[in-house]
Image (cartoon, rainbow, N blue to C red; front, side, top):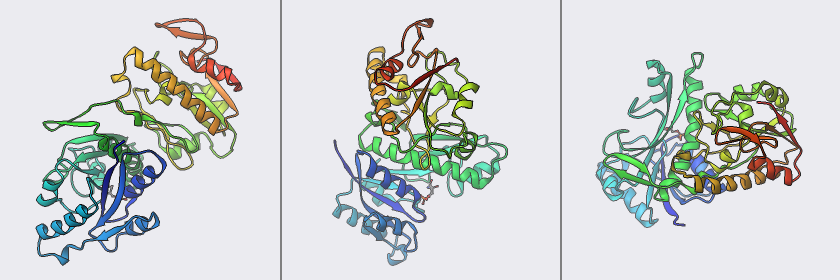
Length: 380
Ligand code: GRF
């Protein structure tokens, strides 16, 4: 695998830099952060770089006679380190001609709104004050203007009526931290193609891998705190449950609603939604599901989802999904698994085949049974 030498440019807090660095440490990624560049000697990001033993270089604009000279000095340093890609992470300057020419379509930025809405400073506040119902964040290529380059990926965040600006900023930031490492990795794998100003994703990425720390499930539109409250997550009993039991729409019937019976059972327990499609990163729900880092775990859903999957490679992916599922269950030392009785992939009694309910065992259910897990079916 090609590993692209990357420089991260920061001006402030550096939480996105941290997310990029920490993700790279835990995963086989195609970028390597070689260097942190800042225009601000006071940037808290500097301590974060030091903690990770990453060299940081301060370029104060006041030491240079103009933008050209400033960027030439930076470029010299980037050349020394053989940098191939630049990731702006809260870098508060417009990138000029020198760097744009030296790194054509090789500079990425993350912006806290759904571009092209709310460009520039305080994007979250702009969106909040405007009263939008959805906002989010965008990772885009950098061009000569501010926040106008081609969009690589975006994440949507719902703005609930009761949400404060601070809460909205936090929710967007959580999404930023999840999105940026994923996109940078995919970018460095050359999995985006620029056509005119449109970015096409050219390949179903192997990086669709979910990864697990601890676990708990979260609906796309929910927020983490609500989830923790709802499931009273504090006790340590480990339960896995069909994703559809938590109300995550199933690929086959698309009708699965959260099952009260399951919700009741998982109250006060730590839950891991299972679903081979989910584990394979194939899941393309009408709503995305994600796991959140920290007390919970986080899982990436492949943005291409099933779109690029024909029947043949879907089966293969499902099998990979089951393998990941087993690994996750073992790793999490799950004690009990709740399966939906009519799930096409998990059930032990009834499955859907071509839309018709027949007796049978789903691929995941079968495997879990073989592996000796304690299983319980629920209606739904
Ligand atoms: C983020 O909101 C990012 O989207 C924007 O600047 C902020 C930087 O935050 N470009 P941090 O320094 O990464 O914590």
